[in-house]
Image (tube, rainbow, N blue to C red; front, side, top):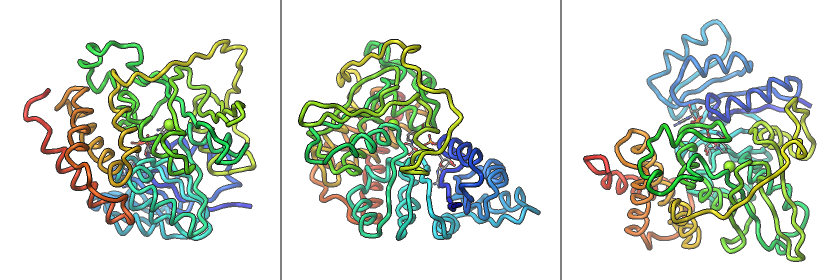
Length: 388
Ligand code: NAD
Ligand code: MG
């Protein structure tokens, strides 16, 4: 049976891989709507390739450019917040939520509609407002399928037993481009070096988060909400080959793990399809050819963002929202070459410690965005006039 699909963040890294999966299975999916940020030509191209019915950009000023780029195709379009929300409101069985950052929170949350499936790539939605998001998803009967490779692996590994029999659920990290660098070398690294990820090809924000290991910290918070596991039962393991993505250690000593070659099309196909499998014409995992897999502990001294995220998860309340917001600003100014690498963690730490005791976990998107805004403003005030 053909299912309808809406893709949020259609022009990004996950969005493009989703398009590849859909185009390989044209008879299985019909694309209702595609959403992007501000690139009219790229979104129009995607909408045409996928035969979407509606295309929306969040940047209001792009309305005319998008209309022009889609002229004569019969594809409707719009721009601005209301157009993005219209895309989300249109009937579709599945929403791929792949906008990057907190910008994805409102549209991802608005995607929660009775009976729908949400393929969730936008981990920031869960970090920012995870308790409210998961509670609403459960109430509305929405199935949330993780696209993040580690969580997709855990989703299946956890299905092998009961939540209370989980000793630890472990997500792996490739370690990023600076895994073997000294602290002194890392301190001098610029955004270009931080973006040179050894394994995955991804969007710019998550690339920097992978270099600081904040990505893994955000993923611990994501796992906490997705799988109802407290901080003590979650852990990180560095695994440079990125073949084992997630492991569950059961209370009897057994371990169930999820393995795959590192290609986001694998978890994307899985999140779109769930229990049945889509055929994907991709290279197969050949463990004999790989020969050896290696693992090591994460070094929180060289990667303090991981420790900060763990502390935010432990603290709970509004702290993960604050951590995430401060990190987005710090990453943005690092990418603009305004601060050095370790100023990212310094800014995050400073905002988190100043805002300690900022109250309960947000119960609504509006509450999450209010806390987010406050933490962003504070982070911006900490950005030095001169590069540090
Ligand atoms: P990306 O930067 O490549 O793409 C982001 C997409 O969001 C683009 O289509 C952009 O146009 C759109 N966008 C940006 N701001 C928007 C706004 N305000 N409104 C509407 N659309 C907007 O990012 P990505 O790497 O594809 O990551 C997307 C999400 O998936 C992130 O939350 C990331 O953490 C998560 N994720 C990515 C990967 C990966 O391999 N790339 C893996 C796991 C999880
Ligand atoms: Mg991941």
